[in-house]
Picture 1 (spheres, rainbow, N blue to C red):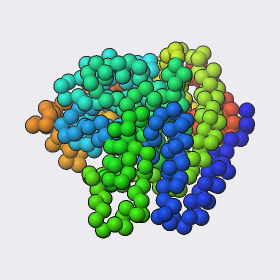
Picture 2 (cartoon, rainbow, N blue to C red; picture 1 turned 135 degrees about the vertical axis):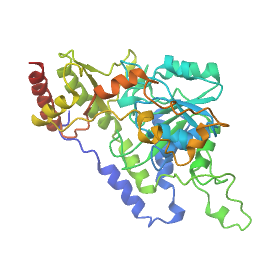
Picture 3 (tube, rainbow, N blue to C red; picture 1 turned 30 degrees about the vertical axis):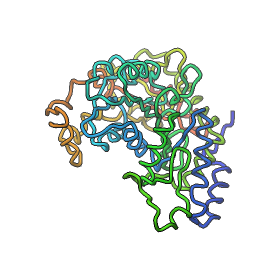
Picture 4 (tube, helix red, strand yellow; picture 1 turned 180 degrees about the vertical axis):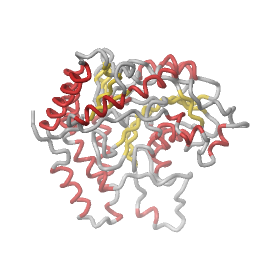
Length: 404
């Protein structure tokens, strides 16, 4: 095992220089974007990959491609970054929050079933902390009701379900290259799909509605735009295309992706070996046949025994890097409680829907509400193994002190 792992390597620098050497000439545009999309789709064994400027834009595009519109409902989990719900709201649709599983922390298929109404158009599960969602059961439910499944895999790169990478079982899957993610270019995102129809919709939605782009083509040609009679826009769209510099970095990251991924798994294992002796710390459960990619190590703390702040403070005093808490549940954020949704609150009311002041309030997802204040998230992105070993020692010391 390499003690010191370079997160950004020579390939990333080489490809960035190739882009800079083009002087950003339009004739060279999408050179890296095309290459990274091809490599990404090949890695997952999926026909189409469409790159984006970030992993929130991907969700906006995917929900739109699924045909979701004003007043339609999309089922999402509340225990995750709010961007998942934003992708729904940006399409003037209604996020409906299904509860999570108490052991995996991922969205519960049983709760999804209870949330389906005649207005439901899609399900958007999140593979939380690196653990793939129950895509097999979720897609079974979707098929029964004619729904589209869009996986939000921002935190799960090459997590596995019975040997298959997370994201290949559903209609579409979204990935993020934000700075904290498994692979990064600072910002960026990708959508995977085997559907040419969805790929065409995503491409045009994210590329200004250009008529000359499609599932496997990300740029209109100079010959097209030099024709005065050329009709460019077949639909409205956004400018969500990934810049060439970001594409170059992701392309380089893909060349040592397995190494970057393995480091997070090794660090998680190091911490898990220590935690397993303490019954008041319960790690995220990994079901049989599932492989966690450990974007972070998530643990449930028995706060009746040891307070969250007490644990955090003790860890810091012993030299810990700090511990992340879980996000506030999305529907308990002020924007939902106060309906400050940039005018989209109108789509949650009649005639589009049946919003009431208590639709987004405490009590709708009791398991998520129980888990959120108990969650501890330990970093796994230690590129110097000595730093991880030091943190493991700090954790061991902290647990012994708190257990005494």
